[in-house]
Image 1 (cartoon, each protein chain N blue to C red):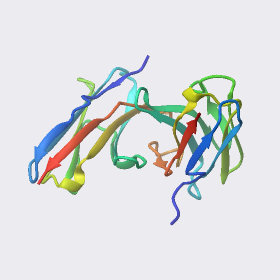
Image 2 (image 1 turned 45 degrees about the vertical axis):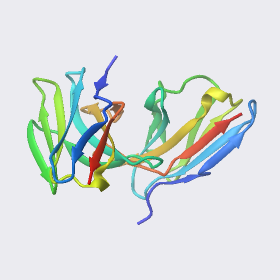
Image 3 (image 1 turned 30 degrees about the horizontal axis):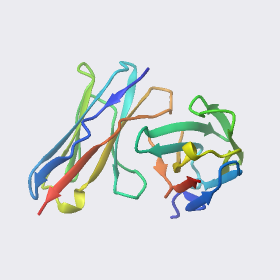
Length: 111
Length: 113
């Protein structure tokens, strides 16, 4: 069974710090990787996706992928209290749209 | 642009009743997904459609659940009969088949008493 593992947290960081969120996956056939942010009581919101090994930057967010280690991470620079949310990692295989989600990491950014 | 639209936003019903959840995907998207989210099990994919055709329904928990997509702009998820363990937030999401990921609707919070 394909699995996506995340530490449930909470991960607590002070405002302005870098938050590092991690995710591991079991299926070596996984090709696409997504990060979603979910505020309490709201729906998941797609914030980043990455397909190739290495880093991908978008504003304060950087996604990092290492397929050899089956590891994907999300860095949030200059964390803000408004970044406090649960971050969900999701993966799928090439040619397959079925996403497998991790259980999410709760991030708390304190002022 | 309108995002994914779901209705109703909240549904409270009694055990044994039929429940129908509705979804309108983002215009132009050709893939549609139904998810269920609970504290215990997290976010689970129930079924997804490509070009209105069901592709994978392996996540549908049992025969009490059924889903249809009669056209590109509308889908339903039906539970008949409903049970208390079906209580959850049900999300619909849509995407382009080539892009993966998905854009979620606001969800329907279902409570079965």
